[in-house]
Structures are given as C-alpha cells and as structure tokens.
Length: 375
Image (cartoon, rainbow, N blue to C red; front, side, top):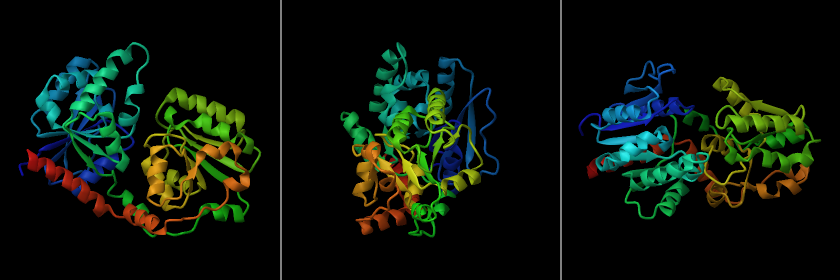
C-alpha cells in the first residue's frame, strides 16, 4: 500500500480531539493524513505530540477562493474522508460536484444531522439552492459510512439511486473505551430514591432544536414541585435555541435547573454525568450516541419517543429504553421506578461491545482495506 492514501478532513469541533487520537493510535502508519480546515481567526488546530501527519488549510472567507484552495490540497489523495458533510461550505460542495473524479474519492462519515436534518437547514432563499446542492452531493459520493446501524438503511432510503459503497463502523476514542470497563449492575436511580435525594434529569446533550428541550420540559411541568434537578447541556449547537431553553427552564423550574452554556473540563463534566439518574432524548433522529452509550453502561433510565430511530434500535438490541410519549401523564413515582431488563443476552452483548475498542478498530480497518482493494 502506498503512503498517504486517505486524507481526513475536519474542522474545529468538540469531537476532533477524540477522532485524531483514534487515528494516531491505530492508523498512524497506515497511509492516513489529518487535514484541518481552519478559519483565519482561529488558533492552529495542529495537535502537539501526535505522530500521524497533520496539515491545515487556512480559509480566507472568500467562498470560491477557499473552495479552490481546499480542492487543490486534497486532489492528490486517493480518498477524501469527510468527517461530516457539514465540514464543506456550499462553494466547496459545488466545486466538488463539478469534478466527478473527486466525487468518487469522497468517503462521507455522517454525524447524524448531516443525514437526518440536512434538508431543513437554511432560512428563506438559501434553501432554494442549498437543498438541491445537498441532495446532489449526497447522491454522488463514492462511499458512505454510517456510525449507527440504522443510518445505513436511512441513507439507502433517502438515496436509492446512489451507487455509493455503504459501510457501518461506530466512532470510538482510543482513551474513551476505558470508561466502559468494570460494568456494575448498580443503578444510581435506585440509590437516589432509597436515600430520598434529589433526582437529576438530563435533557438532551446539546442546544440543537431537534432535541425538543422545551417540549420535554412542558411534559415534565406537572412534576416541577418534586425534588428534581434538570441538567441541560447547551454548550454547543443552536445559540438562539440555547437562550430560549435556558429562559424557559429558569421560568418554569426556578432553582431546579443547571444550564451548561460553555464547555467545562472533562473531569468535571463526567463527574456531573455520574450524578444523572434519568435522561430524556426527545428526538426522532440519531444523535448524542457518546452520551447515550455511557448512560446505557451506567444504567441510567433512558426515555425516547417510541417512533424514533434510536428507540427502535436500542429496544431491538435488548436495551430497556422507556417511551417518552407518556411523560406528560406519568407520576413522580412512575418516573423514578426501577426498570426491568427483559433481554439479558442482548443487554450483555451491548455492554461487552461498548468496552471492546478492538472490535471497532477492526470495522474501520476493513473499510479502508476494502476501499484500497477496489482502487
């Protein structure tokens, strides 16, 4: 295999460090290069102490000039691995579409929003060209990687005429898998209720509107007088929605909310997550998998809409997810009641899978080996 065949394109996101750590640990000598698209006002994204080759493309703000610059830096590689299609501006997408040879090289690793809600983005006239542009690039990519099993089916449902290679492999962190060791059947909620302590309820994991924070709080309004604390991570996503959610939470649950508006040190954040008894993800698409997998491992009581893609998948795998559709009618006692694991084999298999980084590395390795073999 010749060197530097795969170039991984990403921008500054909360997930970037984990992705770089993963490829540096397991694919450093396997023809992979990291490419950051950096805006001129940002600090360098180059990670110190990393052996895998890294490079930056500095963006000026001129859409077409930036598009040409990005394409020029990527065109010599055999495969262009996009960590979310949202990493590309409209100008970049248009220029890529004009180069069929480049489109065949694209490996799109979807992040959820770029698969499930891409055609909802953009107000007013912007939608008139962004939606057709988004449709065209998604149909013509060379390869698609779903990070959640149902995502592969969703891609094929939306784009049945696509000739893309379709793969599945979950994101994971070289260090993050350590959080999935030493599983215990202990349930925080049981201890909280036994000790008559405050019940901590997490709503969503970011500030995106698709998580329906306000709708969720309306369903919980009849429990506002109970000993609860709502934890609302709003440190990234839709800033306008974050303000609306925080305002609503403070008005309707005074003194009972923690609205996280900025990133906090990881140790402090994980310490807070360890206090969560119940988590509600009132969304119909795939999102927040990192949070949700940790909650499954820690036996947090999970609520999701019955018709959501995540509810259907997790229940099919033996994970006891509760139906959020009934929250507006549920009593405090029912909300805090214990749950039963009815599929112990499926549940055990999921727990074991969460702790196996080797299994995930092998899935990614097969993808890159298959692509190389087809070249």
